[in-house]
Length: 82
Image (cartoon, rainbow, N blue to C red):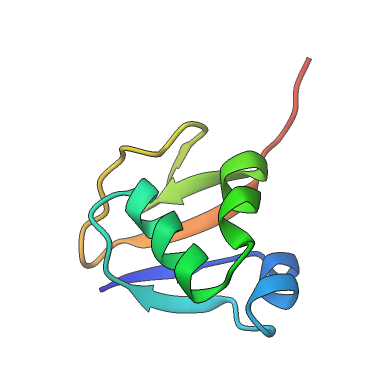
């Protein structure tokens, strides 16, 4: 199963302070659905406000990116630019 890491803010708000999980999901879209099922309300927040790093590579629009069973997936605040 992939290792999933949330920011402490998300962990505190939605997951009772827990920030690390092991979840099996084929891609980021399914991962977000699994997190939403476990922690209602977190899905829209992840989709709207977070970038995703999979094994050290950051994706701004990651929904179809694959996740290997040994991957590390970090949800990070999006950085705005101008």
